[in-house]
Image (cartoon, rainbow, N blue to C red; front, side):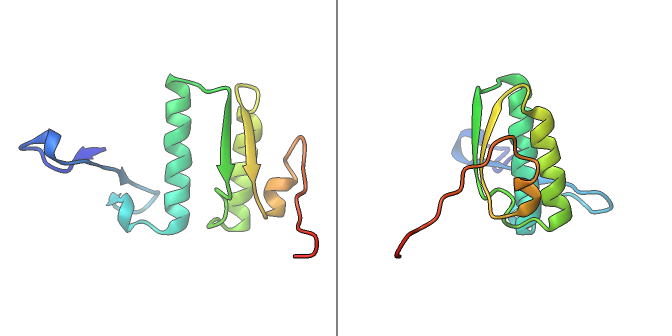
Length: 110
């Protein structure tokens, strides 16, 4: 994290810098959609370590992840589920396969 305006910190926002293995640090706005998803989840887990919530709701957080990384995210959520509940909306079988409970929702006549 870095301030947008070091001279007057209250006149700007905060930029998030991310760095992935074998890559230089970049602003989150320049990251790919998959990298943004990973960064957002990593940030939420960092916050969870400080101030845990009883549940988290993720709406297609894995949408921009390939099958391998969606599976890794599913494993991480499964490991962390002893601390908090995770409600995940997903279309990925890698995520569904690690779920403790699955609720299917589908449209009828429309």
